[in-house]
Picture 1 (cartoon, rainbow, N blue to C red):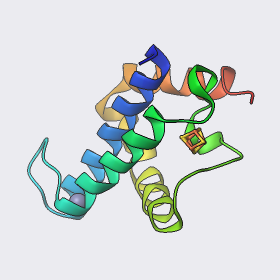
Picture 2 (cartoon, rainbow, N blue to C red):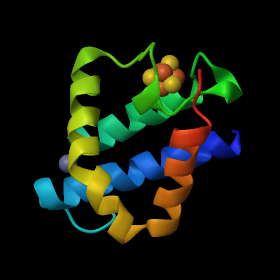
Picture 3 (cartoon, rainbow, N blue to C red):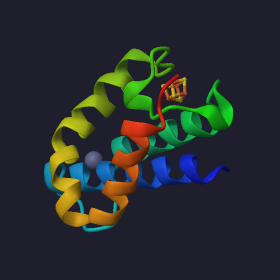
Length: 106
Ligand code: SF4
Ligand SMILES: [Zn+2]
């Protein structure tokens, strides 16, 4: 898998983890069944993305291949964890944001 997709998968995983730990009361580095399904789904979408290695970050995608329920869930996670992830993983966040800002022009 290309570096950018690995980075996005890692960032999404951290965001879901943060959301699950705080909203669903799970232990650090653990996911509840629902969040685990959401992560598996997001990872699968990223791995099989229609754009291949020219993939934009999903939040900037015009196609958006997520099914409605998963899209709603991932948006909720992003809204909650987006601002917090800076404090938890600043380097990862900066890399992700750089890619989101400058590399996602499709
Ligand atoms: S939402 Fe867009 S960028 Fe993300 S996996 Fe689906 S098609 Fe690819
Ligand atoms: Zn959860």
